[in-house]
Length: 94
Image 1 (cartoon, rainbow, N blue to C red):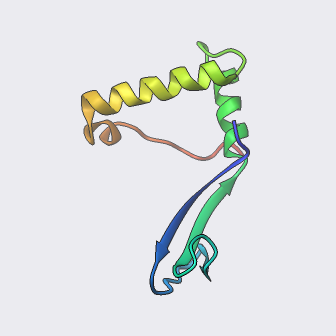
Image 2 (image 1 turned 180 degrees about the vertical axis):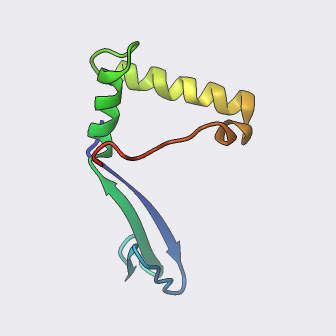
């Protein structure tokens, strides 16, 4: 897995937000402002969760593909209702 993740938003006008990088003019496309937010080491965290989980194993491309496929199945079957019972607590390091 990769080492980090980010969400990027583009706008014709600058949109500053607290805790978000930017806005940067022309950083992604010539006439738009870009703002981004991200987290470091998210890919390494996913690998850690796979190794830690009882059904896990060594993370590899096939394992990540199976996980992504299962998430897609759940989203197709449950839609937005999936998120109502999905709780993620990001406190691995305190």
